[in-house]
Image 1 (cartoon, rainbow, N blue to C red):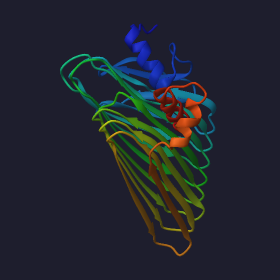
Image 2 (image 1 turned 180 degrees about the horizontal axis):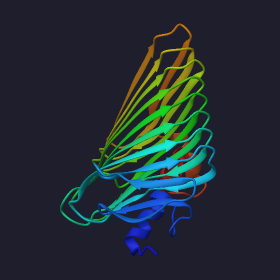
Image 3 (image 1 turned 90 degrees about the horizontal axis):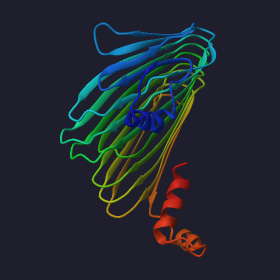
Image 4 (image 1 turned 135 degrees about the vertical axis):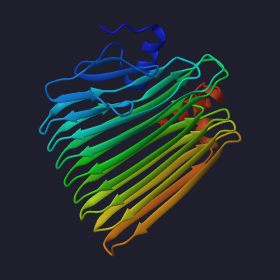
Amino acid sequence: MIQLDEIQKRLLKEVADLHSVPEGAYNIRSNGEALGRVSTANIEIVPKTDVSGIDINIKPGTKNESVHIPVVMTQSGLKETVYNDFHIGEGADVVIVAGCGIDNCGPGDSEHDGLHRFFVGKGAKVKYVEKHYGSGNGSGKRILNPGTEVYMEEDSSMEMEMVQIKGVDDTTRTTKAELAARASLVVRERLMTHGDQKAVSIYKVALNGDGSSADVVSRSVARDTSYQKFDAVLTGNAECSGHTECDAIIMDKGTILAVPGLEANSVDAALVHEAAIGKIAGDQLIKLMTLGLTEEEAEEQIINGFLK
């Protein structure tokens, strides 16, 4: 049985909604080492031999199963890079829960970088949840740089939920995807920065097959003097449909940059980008304050609802 201290338990709850060791397949990583690993009959987790990381092999036809691969870091000054590959068999339907939580109470920067590659078989369905969280009162930074590559075969679908709400000082999230015929990708990003934090999100999606589609939507809040950049490029190489959207609230002296990119290489590619950046509407604040909330409480209510 895995033994978790209170900080590890709190981090796992924040990034993977885990209150205890999960059922099914899992790989829990703590401070650069495997804390626990379990495979099942349909989901095999194998450590890599050449670099730090794991291979997750999901058998064709696997249904209603999940795999958890959270990372927690409590050691100040630790820096690591991890490579994880997911091989999802034809016709599978699975949930994958990742995420990283860093509690840094020391003077050194703590950094977790990772590359997740997904090879999604024909007709397979994947829901992927990745949450980032930082805490600790040390002067060292909490740094996360996740890279994601998605390769989708015909008739496959993937839904990605990318969440970062608190405590991460510096992050660059890079996501690349290639879609074959009738493949579908949906991305929902939720992000909040505060203090002098920086967050960059880069999405590059190639719609290569007829009937492929992508919908990439980011909702974010920039507070204090924090900085955000949302850079999304859709490339339509066939009869396809694509949509990107940045919907952001700017507060205090925050900065938000939205960079749209659409490239159509087929007359049948239909691509759309939307962006809206603005402050909290005054009438929303007044309405909530008439119900007895302070201005600060009203702001929090609006932000919480916006990021749901």
